[in-house]
Image (cartoon, rainbow, N blue to C red; front, side, top):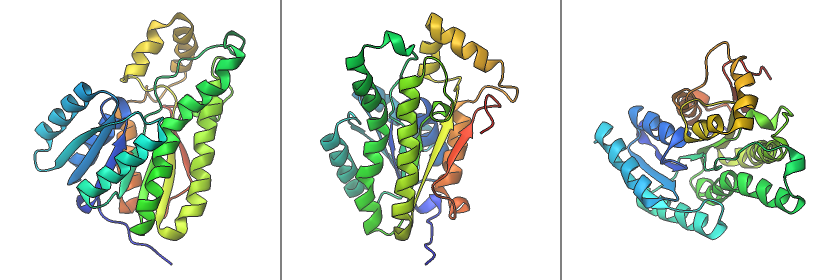
Length: 261
């Protein structure tokens, strides 16, 4: 049975990690596409307030609010989803991009007792919001879930063994959720960039000697240019829109040519 997809101009969106980086760029792009209602989520109230003010300056016609939350905490995530659904009346679009700022480390330098907590810390901030929104989207018979991971899910790179395992968990979660949720008109897709040149994480990577060498080599392969948060935001708008009504379970690399898988 075919399910209709709301146009962005009639949709409501919830963005975890929406106060900076890819999440904020996605919020801006969705509002520019005519989104009327938006909730952004982050840990810091000061940054959330500044983000809302900035978004409302450029899109004064939209309703935008901020809710504070640690996306790795299940009860907090469920509470945010409930509040957002009550405030907006629906959640048609979820962008889950609160994966933190994981730094590459060679595996032998990571203590054994830190391996699993690190893997869970990275993946839970993306996976929990997607799971938490499932009942709401099921009740309304539709929605688009867009998760952010990285190409470390697909490429075994020295220094990213634990990060890659976490990212692979995210991508497989999205594929499995897509299979289960499609009968309810819910689409689930995942974007996997490599280097994103205008984010807070990029600055941290460039300041770290090991990460700078590692990603400097990768940048040399980006013959199409270093990816920006705005590039990813355009993909988010597409995946959230009726143009992607038949797309689900996809893991899409956007890397500027660093990888081609």
